Length: 420
Image (cartoon, rainbow, N blue to C red; front, side, top):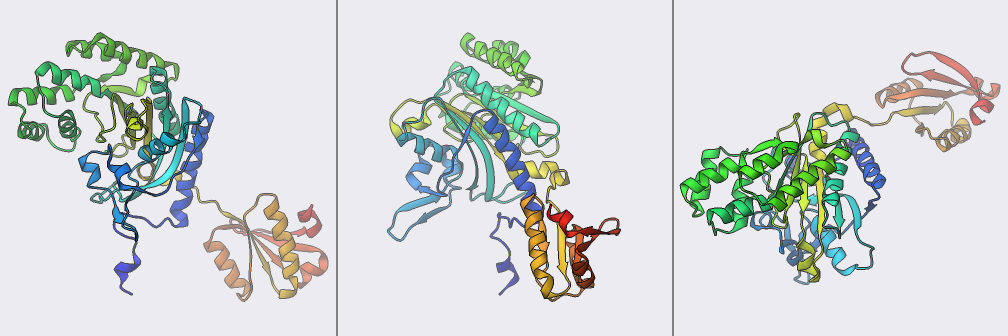
């Protein structure tokens, strides 16, 4: 078989033990934080009906959906995030007491152009807080995201917050009737393309040159959230929205998170289902956002016909791993490698191995054939901490020889002592 066929499909990864344990360490810490906030885990099928996925995804995301037809001709697609599937589930499971707090660690798929930090198959950790319209729920979700990233010691974390209603009011005041989502998709490219190019893209969408430059200037506003009110007044934003941002800042101060949060009006998020408050999470280690989210008060109505407020976020676990590098390498060692020198000592080897496993150690029992030298070399290669030898002298004397593979020191330990 050709070598290229032995590699995973483009934009996807094989999770070998050297990487998988790091992934599981991050998943465990994220889940612990979500559980501490009272969120419960959820999972959904990888495949969704295509109509469900495209209902509020936006044109760019629809083009990235892995699309297929099953043998009955039904149109299906691989989920591109978990917010849409969760919204679908809650549209028929109306028995959950509200607000509903859910979290997930799941694979998602997007047929995007693979590049650094951008994959076609990747893991997301996220939460969905459904049924509450309050600023307190927005603050809780954002604080949970910050605490999750703190739990894995992500360095230099900053949060960039905005609100889609700010740009709505700016567009209304400018008398721009161009589709809101079109303008937001252009402004969402800020940082990826130069400002001059953004202006050209807006003009191409039918916006006057002066107005386009003003919109790009608005998108360049970035101040600590504690100073956001002044900037919003300068932009003639409504008192109600200014009051909301001030309340959000106050709530975040209760979580000791406000110092890392900035008002950044370039943050609009690319998905069409966002309706108001939005945010993205960054670290100085990589240029890409490691996560983001916001409020999507109209998504569940598409599926259930019921107005249900909701807010949530998702964090890309591979991007967190890229930012952490070797700092999160958590593959556990083998504690003991047990080597019976003759098959007749195998039963004793099993007894010792089972006992050590039952009290929490990782133990390998040699399955036969290699010489002592080969077994020692193998145990060293897999980074076993200790090597237990069971030979005739040891078995007859009621002890085993334990070699420390780091110091290479040996001692004889009574079998009864190990089993007790």
